[in-house]
Length: 289
Image (cartoon, rainbow, N blue to C red; front, side):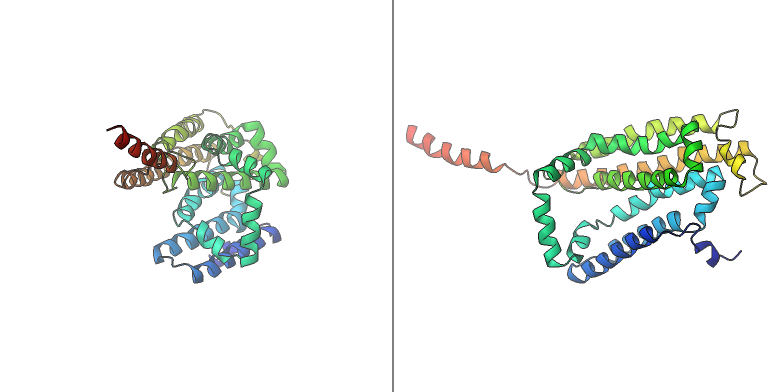
């Protein structure tokens, strides 16, 4: 089998291709209107390509028939690809890629009360952090994994949930703005990876050192690499969740720490109400003297 043939989709999806094409076109349009550095452009395209490889190539076949490849797929979807893509800060570029009429409609839509309520929940730091951990740990419950690997609809939902929660988490963690307008305080962004990586490391260690086969569904469906024993396959999968995922979250924490140090050198921002209150108090003091 040639390397080119590995790029053939295992289960072609028109919806998935449409999403990738739409995002790529929007970014290409936006980068013509906004000045974007070469490093940021490279990070965006690398992240997008990694998402495509993990979701829409023959790698998906191996992920369905080998546990450690399945964990590699989720490592890319949950950690590596969203980390690289969000490090490019693509939001402003994608928005600039929209037609003017669509941007105006988007601003009006964002002002709607139901939309603000939903955004307050979805973009809440606690919700994002919990969803980030649950989207990995929940699907590793043996009974849940068994059903997910046999039903293509649940399998697709599993991969999408892992990818979306990863995008939300790394968007929150790599936010370089002060709070407000950011919903997350800079110090919490540094602490968050320590909290979220702990249960993932624990589950990875349990899988690695387990003495029995936790995921017989891969034997039932037929393993892609018959030379790899089930025990070794499971141990490799646990190690992937344990070590590389922890390293990537540590890298994210250091990037967040860099933003904290940068923000600490900026002059403090006085709220407008405090400035107005101070301006009124000064004449009063002068009159009293």
